[in-house]
Length: 330
Ligand SMILES: [Zn+2]
Image (cartoon, rainbow, N blue to C red; front, side, top):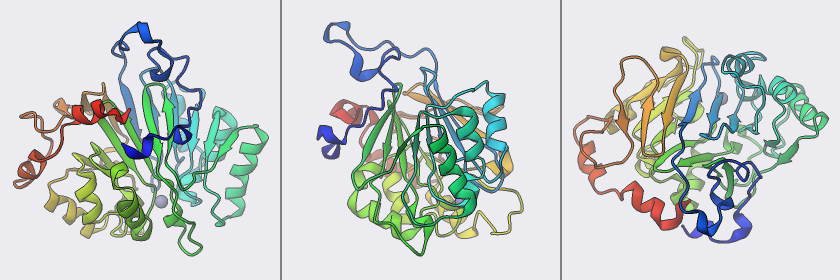
């Protein structure tokens, strides 16, 4: 991947180095890293009308993307999972439905790193989050015009290049994050709307291409998903984070219809509660009763989540995930 070659793009935040099997830390004669005994766990937390995504690496490293609309929901989820500290917190943009619980997370779970944009959109309550970050002495990182790689144990988080900040649409200032763990991947782009997504699609298509899971932008709004993006991402499954009976009408019927046409199943937190997906880097599971194990590698037979006609033919032409891994993606 061309964009990954220059070392200056590589931001290793020290999260991975001490962990078992940390990729850059292994010596030449140690041989390949042993398979991790624990899976990657991604929880799309049920926090009502907002986003909060919890990522736990096989080594037990913790990343949190957004903290929902309320003060307590995300913190309660973290506690119920026995989490008492967060390695990295990312706030996609400066809207309350994403930062509502972040001040509490920052003060109680003390992330080592905090990723936030320098967008000029501010409110009193948002400034309190920044205050908490400063009070705790947390290292704050602002995305730049170049992709940044963050190693969370053996999980790679890529912060998408930040387009120039918009002064009239804060959603278009969303931080985009791509997660890769072996052949499993997740794309999360906050509440990005057409303008920001079009920039990524035209300038950084490789960072969007072929993700196992797509977290729909903007809670399934019609302005959060489009065909051009889906054609690049080609997700096996989509997840939307939203509240039952929300006043915005999310998810919009246009989004639901588009996904249906593309044969992409949609999982909604308003219908299912927290959506939990685990992966060992080769296969992935939806952690809900009654769902069969499904593999992530494409074109390998009966492992497809999507069953809509027309989709199989399209996926058959895709490059295999193993070849991508071998090509130096990680
Ligand atoms: Zn939102």
